[in-house]
Picture 1 (cartoon, rainbow, N blue to C red):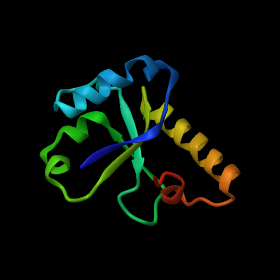
Picture 2 (picture 1 turned 135 degrees about the vertical axis):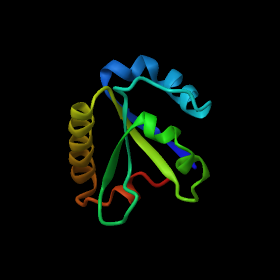
Picture 3 (picture 1 turned 180 degrees about the vertical axis):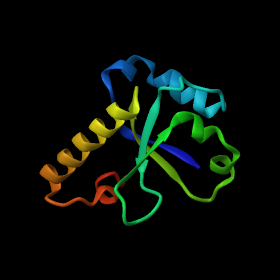
Picture 4 (picture 1 turned 90 degrees about the vertical axis):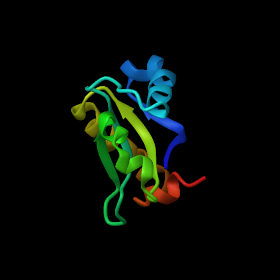
Length: 106
């Protein structure tokens, strides 16, 4: 199942398009090929995964028992890496640790 964080981090370019991107993903429609999402890592050793939004349209993610929790959106892979670095810095400064799962837990 694909879930979205309530406090989604987003690059400036995509802020006006967040609702459109969420709606297109929910209806399994293609988004811009340049849109990347930052999710909590699929394994416990890593902090984040970075996906092209088009990958989330595959049946694997729709039918999978694993949750994909989106915490950030960016307009390019480079912006996604920069945004992930800012997120890690914010998490470390506010908690003193790099436990992103606890930070994003509801």
